[in-house]
Length: 442
Image (cartoon, rainbow, N blue to C red; front, side):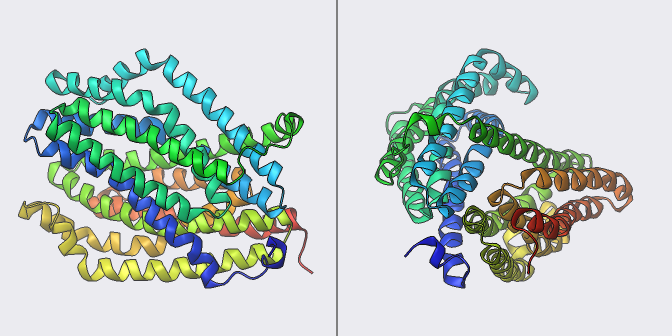
């Protein structure tokens, strides 16, 4: 059955077929770093564990800003799928891979400069600095694989191959854990073993994804003339520029949250760290609907199906709000206990419990912005998304000062309103964008 025969009807099964595997994939990806910390922790060496944590933070901060390779590829591939153009889908993959190769080459070229600067910025010193440097020096060589993997994952998701991506992520994590255990606990490579396991598993994941992509027809470009279209490259670069700016602003908002919370002392910083991890878990779950919206809205946009597009928006918002309510209810009932399980200090537990209500309402307040991100990316309305992000960030920054007398509650209030403003701003833009993208409804 063609996409044209199904696109205007978006039911629960269609949404969940995309959202649930995406949720599980997000969680599986998050387990990647936890495995490293657990394995190195078995050595009982605080300096080694600190070095792995610092090195991993550096690599994550460096590579997260290039997430647009995955997100943008998903949107453009879904739009091409909506037009049912296999050659265009393959050309989208090839263009994105070329961009990833250029970025990877640039990262490798500045390695000798950026690594020392990063370690100084993280205030690394002594044994930890040396071990962290060794960790980064090894794992850095996986940068090309990480960027290429992002492109291929985005391309497969854009073709609704979300389950295949989940299987690949789980397989890569199993391999990663096995290599971790062998190198660290059997062969006693320490920090270098953890870094090597991470690097090797990324390259193995690349091999797995490459098999999936080739089986899906990723080699059917359909001629070099279609590949080198200036308009298509321009569209790719503009979209990725906007997604890059959006990621920078979002990352900046989270860094501001941590920096502002640190002013209240170590106890508040520790409590906020626990609560923030709970928020991130809820975001990973609800981001499944962002992925579903990217794919379904991208297909509808590619087909020019306004009714299907609106149906996709409504379905993802409806199920996103319902899932957000479930997560919020779980945190309202069990949030204090969950937070307490992360730290044995009764003072930290008390502070976390005193603020856990903010984490309980965040899934409901933030889910609209998560889903609408998927809608805007799927439709390639990235400039409007950046504008709403800029407005929300400016309001958030201003509110941090206004709400300062409320202490840590003021910080959480500002953070919650950051997501509310984003969601409302995107909803306000939506009618105008629908009319410009599809024509006025009749």
